[in-house]
Image (cartoon, rainbow, N blue to C red; front, top):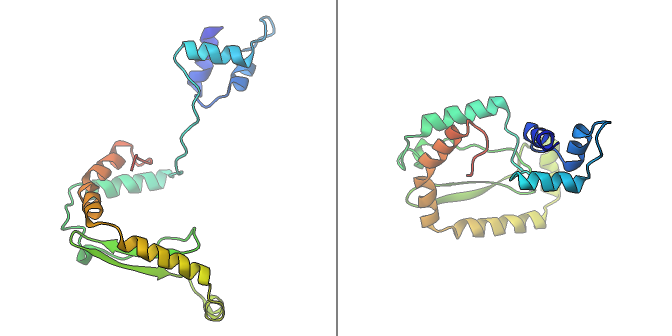
Length: 176
């Protein structure tokens, strides 16, 4: 019975003790309690854990991440200088969207981006100024200016390690 419990757990580590109970119970054997199943797993060195939540990265994006990391693995601080950068705006997801840059000698400006704007959104923005969003942007701007250059330099110096980490995990989320 213990082998069946361990096999069920190793086949799918995210299975609960209830799922394992259903899969290993047969009509000829006594029903095991969930607590017994958990004890058997603990004796075998398999302890219950909550799975770590990581962002979903599609196969296409994993390949793109690895390709980008391989291309930028040997970059140094010079390549991350602003004249070699192309400013981009990422999709929203929050109430205030900002764009900022930094390089090895100083911090660049922090700009507020108001997303994709058509005629109706533009008219709405002119009529309704949201002071709460303005306050959030002011806080973000103050926080951005307070980032010490040592932190920026550490980020720049860590880029080769970060690229290697993406390559090592084959494009899946890394510790960075």
